[in-house]
Length: 175
Length: 418
Image 1 (tube, helix red, strand yellow):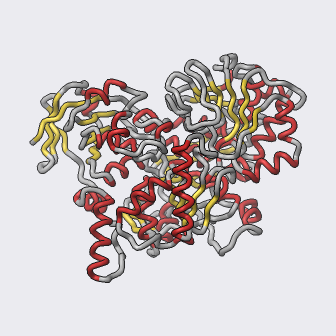
Image 2 (cartoon, rainbow over the protein chains, first blue to last red):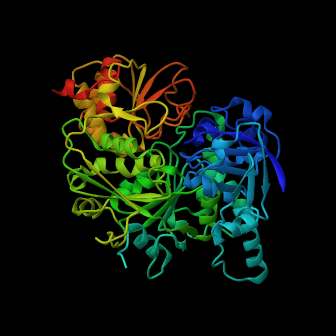
Image 3 (cartoon, rainbow over the protein chains, first blue to last red):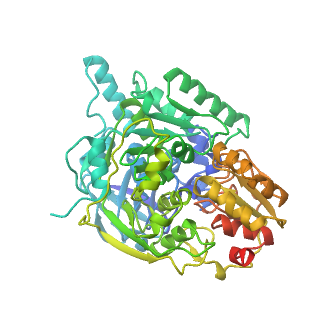
C-alpha cells in the first residue's frame, strides 16, 4: 500500500494541453519534456509535482494527438499511475508502452480534490480515497505483459536479445 | 449468431485468422505503416531496440509535412536525420518537403487499398476509412515496434453505425456533417469504437469530400472509421494501384453497440467553437464573430474541392483579414493552378503556403498572436493548438472559412453565393 497526492482534472483533457504541439519535434531530454507538462492547462503542475503524485481525471483523458510526450512528460515528472473515468485510446496504449498504469475508475474524480491523498494497493488491485474503495480493473494479458516488462521498449529489447542468443525468429513478440 | 462488422472482418484479414469478434486481441500485420516529422524520434527509439533492421521497408512510408519546410535549425536537423534513415534502411515510400500531408499523399499514391489495414504514428489515421481501409493511430514506440517486427497487437473494437440520409444543400459539405455528428455524440462518442457509416448520403458525396468524415472521427475517440467503398472509389484507384485488393463490407446483420441517424438535407453550415471540435453549433449562432485570420488547408479540408469552394466565394472580391491557403499536397496545388483557382485566390488577397500541415498544430507558417481569433478548416481547435493558448480557433468548412475571410467575421457562405 502506497500513498499518493492527487492532481485532479475534468473531462476531455487533450494531449495539446498536456504537452503542446509546438514542442513536439524540438524537445528531447526528459528534463526538457517534463518542464512543459500540462503547461496550457495548469501551469502550477510542472512547478509543484512530486515523484509519486497521481493524476485523477474525468472522461476521455488524453484525447487528441498520438504524441507520446503527453505520457512521458508526466512520467518524467514522477507520475506512475493515471486514474481516469476513461482514456483516449492511443493515450491508454502509450501509458502501457511507457510502463505507466492507466486505471479506469468512473467515480474517483468526482470525490477527490487536488492535494488530497489516496492509497493504492497494486497487489490487491484496490484504490482507497475519501473512505471509499475502488477496484483496479485487470488489463488484457497482452497489455499486462508489456507493463510487466516495464514498457514496450524493454520488452522488445529482451525479445531481440533472445533472438540473438537463440538465433531464432521473432514471431509472437508483440503480445 | 450475428454477422460481422467491418472491423471484425478487416482485423481478421490483417491477422491472418479465419474470423474475429469484438474483444479479441490479435497480432495484426498492417499493409502499410507510416509516420512523418516524428520519424526521427521513432528512429531514436528503434535504435535502442536491438533489431537488425526494418522488417518490411516496402511497407513503410514517411512524409515530411508537420514542420515543413523546416522553420528552425532544430527542425531541419530532425528532417536531416529522417532522410539519412530512409536511405540507410531502404524505406520504399519517402515524400520530402512540399509533397504534401501524409494522409493526402498516401491516398494520391494509392499506397493503401480497400479492405487493407494501415497504422500511422498520427491520430488522424482514421482518415483512411474514406476508401474502406482500417486505419488507426499508434504511438511512436509502437511505430518503432512495427518497423522492427512488422506487427502489433490490436483489440478488435466494438462498432457503432452512423446512417446518413439525404443530400446536403448547396454550401453544406462533409465538414458540416462531421461537426454535427461530433456535436451530437460528443468527444468520446466513439471512444475505442469502429465507427461504420451507411446511408444514401455517402454515394452522392464527391470523392474529394469523403475523407473529411473518417478524418474527423478521430475527434470522437474512434479507433477507426469506415465508409463503404463504391465504384467511384474503384475507378479512382484503378490507374493508381500496384496490387490487387478485396473490398470488405459489414454483414447486414452485424451487431452494433449503438446506432445514430442523421438526415443531412436540412443541415445548415456548422462551426465548432473554441476549444473543442465537438463544440459544434449552427453557423447562425456565431455569425458576426470578428476574426483576424482565416486558414484554408490541412488533411481535413485542403483538397481541390475546398480550394474550388473558396474561389467560388471569393471570385472578384477582396478579403478583409489575413487569409492563409495551404494546399494539402503538391498535386492539389498544381491542379488548382491549372484551374485558375490560385489566380482567383491571390487576386482576392490570399497568401499561398507550401503544401503541408501549415500552422494547424502551431509549428509555423501562420501562428496567431495572443488575442487573435482564427477560423480554420482543420480538425482540432484545442487550447494552444495553433501555438499560443490565448488565441481562440473556430473550425468550419472551406466555404465558411472563405466567406469569413471575405467579411473579417464569421459569415454564411450561402449569402455570398446566392
